[in-house]
Image (cartoon, rainbow, N blue to C red; front, side, top):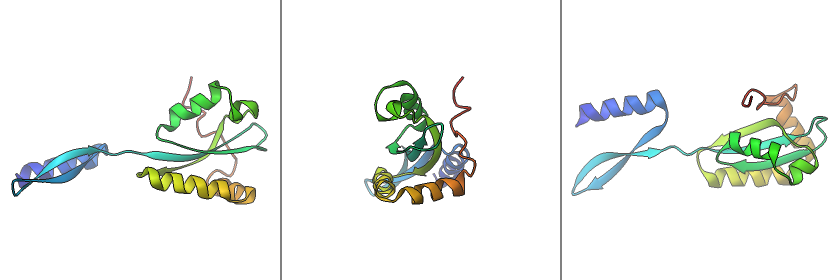
Amino acid sequence: MLERSNRELYRAKKHGLRLPHYVRNDNNYYFRWMKIHLYYVYILTNKSNTVLYVGVTNDLQNRVSEHKIYKGFTAKYECNKLVYYEEYQWIQDAIAREKQLKAGSRQKKIDLITVENPLWNDLSADWYD
């Protein structure tokens, strides 16, 4: 069993898609594969970088495309340029970070974006045709 377990661990590391989860059954331990969930906190802005929108999602690419298509705050203010995002494994951490960013000043958000993306390029520009 140990030999097989090492192969499974190697496979998980190599592909980065699943992690082993130890489960106890009748005094024996075995692996059960768990999918790794990723959550994102992101900041969108408009063409002139005057409006900032902070959000959280579990599918960043899909959510950004929704902002580009659907009506709402981001459509009204033309916020369709992804300038910053962070990745989290736990939704509670992502929501807490989103609240922290929303409560923070505009200047703190600008400083955060400038450190990671000094030119304020659209990080999602090459995601779509």
